[in-house]
Length: 340
Image 1: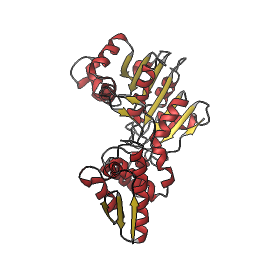
Image 2: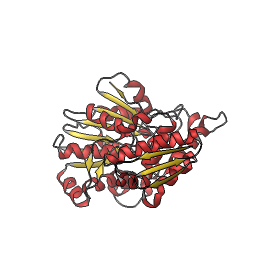
Image 3: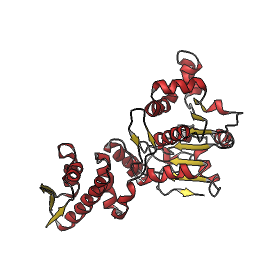
């Protein structure tokens, strides 16, 4: 079976094909079809069912290209996942506004529907929980939203924190003063801020007190007004730490709490503060819970496959992993945010 697709602009076809036709090869391999182009037309050949799926994918990618969206490998694979799931009517929703501009002038935008819902939840709620596997952009997008709010003068400070789980056992063996000891645990937060602001601007704001990056223990006893506060790796908080953190919220502030409940590093006899908060805060007004899936992973394609492989393994009865720990079942995400 052959289907011919006419494009309005040759530039859109080139965008869909990608550098050295890499995007085209992904589509051909995924649906076992052959795609050829002539002038401003594309011909898809193969088994009828596969050709129909490939046609939907090409139409979706062409529509995004026409809107000026960059068509890279991650976007192609995500579109193919949507096609397989019968969600082609939602492809147009991927195109969304810019969250923040990095120091190098690159726009930061949601790349999946889960990310788009997450960013929207952050804008509309005072407290947002972003729960999902590694590589879904939970921390990066939260930092982007924080920098955007700071630039708009909606808040006066950005505060980023995370628990140093291993600190109790290993901190004393690390060289340097206390700040040097905790820096390795905070490095991912530094990296995101450097990307958004640039090292010089970051250091300037740090000296003025507009930016604070510190271990979670430093938050005790404080009230954080006019601030955008991000708690990263929240799955490694205890129930006491989580309650302490949540009650730091002050006037005109936002909180974003991110974590992956499949990577809890707490002792087996301790309950994750994040998992408990997801239950306790259910139904509380102005708090949103966004859950990501493996489809929202925006790192290397292999990362998504690794996550899926682990999820399948942990569902097996004989699996001896995090799913059997006292913290309870560790898998099962959905990307429908619950806005309260």
